[in-house]
Length: 419
Image 1 (cartoon, rainbow, N blue to C red):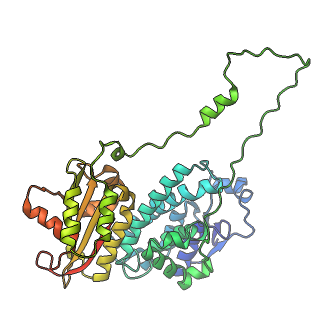
Image 2: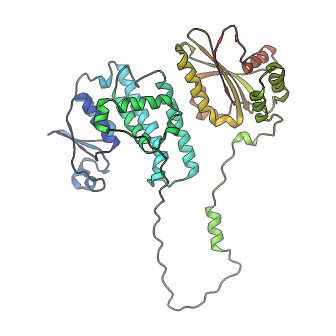
Image 3: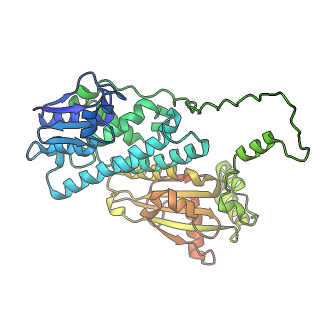
């Protein structure tokens, strides 16, 4: 008996096994005339997967369900398969990225896309905003990894790339517009490289990126029960003290106010962050006399705090443009703190490895917890609170704001501002 895959032709989860089969030279037949909602409800199908989910792979030794398990099975039918790497560590990293593709990319995309299509949880604008931010965090991590890597593991296509690309396919083709994906250039490059590989293209065909986010599909409501008509049309007594039902319904359905950011609840500060940002942006000459002096005149040590940061893994910064892209990606992901922060990031050195150091101004006395929670890059840096009573540290703040060169005896390769 040949391997038979039960699924519709356009199912991205079925693509995983079919692409793996192309790389391995394994014959997998896609069942003909499969109808979702019909074929997967038959007794024969339910014996293979009691949940009725697709795809299912029918083999001489019995059925297998769950798409990643099916792809693994197809891959392992060929001994010493390069799709599983050339060492134990590569094998483990392939499994790592397959799990990431399932728990971060696939799950994150579903939280954004499915409510718009009317699947599962009803659409809610506040929840969508959360879902998009969560998904962007995952894409940001993937983008950072791909900044230094053509493939997820090693120097050629592995099963991790097949699974990741198939999961990204649903996003690129249905909701991730160019305006959205342009924030993640390395993910873009990776995706289009993968889908144009001959073995991918043979299964998936031509891929067209979504031009717009799909409109929200209206949720289907259960029809209202028809009320029995009274036998006699007798007027009912209306109790004047009873509150109007419509008003009650409106009150119950009123949206709950969005919880305030804890930083908005801090006592007012004499420092107006936007005024400092304007002064910084508009000062073109006499920077020390105008902008730096203005900063310290405005600075409120009770309402704000200053922090130095230094990248923990500077020895990895061996390529200049990759290092600068790394810093640029960090600043993109810090966008959630724009209302509460100002930052300078310096890439230092004439020759690799390059050093990455920064200065950040945050509202409050600590680094905001929501920034630590949401921006994974934070843990890649050592953070030290500035002691402004120390003149040496204070002068270092001045030098970083000013992009002073040389900085600490070394030339600046790049300087970026977050404002």
